[in-house]
Length: 343
Image (cartoon, rainbow, N blue to C red; front, side, top):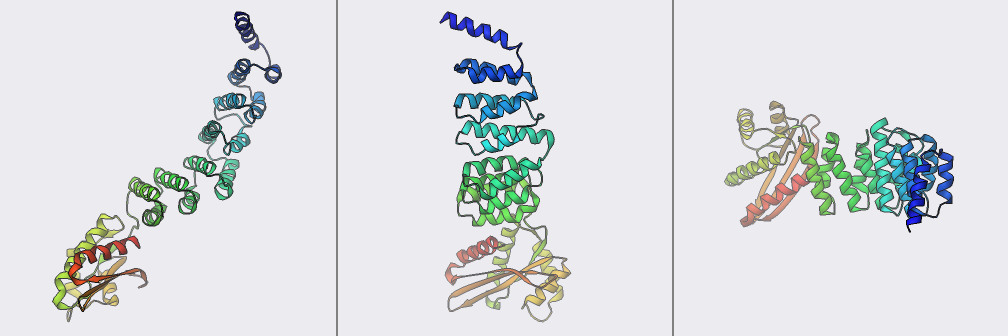
């Protein structure tokens, strides 16, 4: 045992004088994992670009110890030397978790030094689009988070990937990148994704990004209702305005300002149809108005809510909720929730 230890010590002192070709041949001849590890470490310490092709080949070896040592050595070179990109991309789909993680580390090193590299951009998009291994797609998303001009690709993943973990990771990446352009899409994901994990991640990403889902000025009009139920209308309008404001969906015009303009423009009656709502919106310099009706018929309540673009006078979204008059508080909450979810 002592003899073997001394032999290894002697070989360790000798390899520092040998060239890359000698080291390569010795690695392939050796049956000792200790010796091969020592030789590969020496290749890594040399920082000799001529060693990279050999290390790439070893990284793809079926010998687990050899491949791990080689990947450690490749990543230890840092991001400047060429010749490793194809190996990194190949190992993103390895069944070995260690190799996958090292491949991610190596690619990120290269991106940090050189910025976006066309080969990586194309390879990662291909992985996102066609690779059947969800873990490989997940690693691609981890890398895309730190690449430039990838918001739309990440959004495609967030909206359409079949795997919950991959969708959630893409949503988180968009939040980290503070992608203002995808706020509306993240909002929809937070309301409609089938998995709660993804919905919660979308909510967190929206908080990181900040601001409103739509950078528009929105005015909530009085709802059309029979005179004897005017108190219900005022309560619902106040509730809906508060919910819209707290949801950060748009900049909501203060209710007092709306009422002032309504009082100025409506002379004969309080009936506000879509045309009048748009006219009031223009006077308020709002870009969108929310209007609708509250009908009470035979003990039933029907609340219709519409969002209208002031410039085009087109209905952008609409919802309807109904229920028993005695449960009006519950109906107004449901009406506000339904409208906000479809915003």
